[in-house]
Length: 226
Image 1 (tube, rainbow, N blue to C red):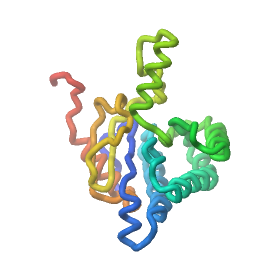
Image 2: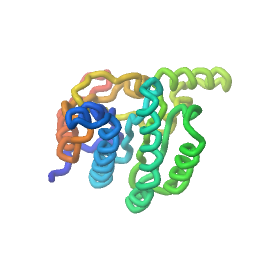
Image 3: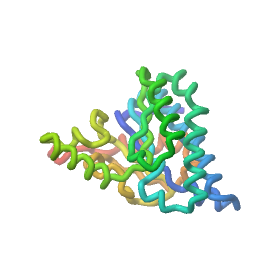
Image 4: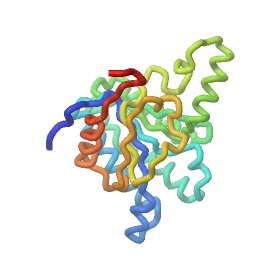
């Protein structure tokens, strides 16, 4: 398969359509989330191959805590198992792993596994993979403003949970929905958006390449005149 003409520094994903994918097959919603893990793996492998340095995934929003308890518990279990299963893949591919969000409601068991994964992959140089978990863009700006007021800083970007991480060049949202759902509200100011009808469990390298080709066709001016 061809390589993309232009490689963004940071590509982010809103992984939408897992539940619909499962319902179309007469299965519970959580089955779609489990299948979606294969798409995450495919995206990370392609990103390493193409030289993309940051890839991030909106895995669980602050609002997702309001979903049925069985689904929330299933997603927590999926996160835990995925961390355990994917450690070797991250190490073999030189991928640094990070989780960003308000983890105050996350179980200690899962927080310990996250820290273990982050510590074990801290030396990864090829790419950084970021999972936004229990995250809200409004929460991020609020906590940044509060910290900045206490510390007397002047640039809110230095206090966002993404401080030190380049803003996304490209945001891809699957399933045909065309909104950002309270995700990185500050950081997406000049990000290019690509919306695809493909449901997340069906998103693979071919669909990823299509999105990158669309990105390459854009004229990014950042408010300037060329």
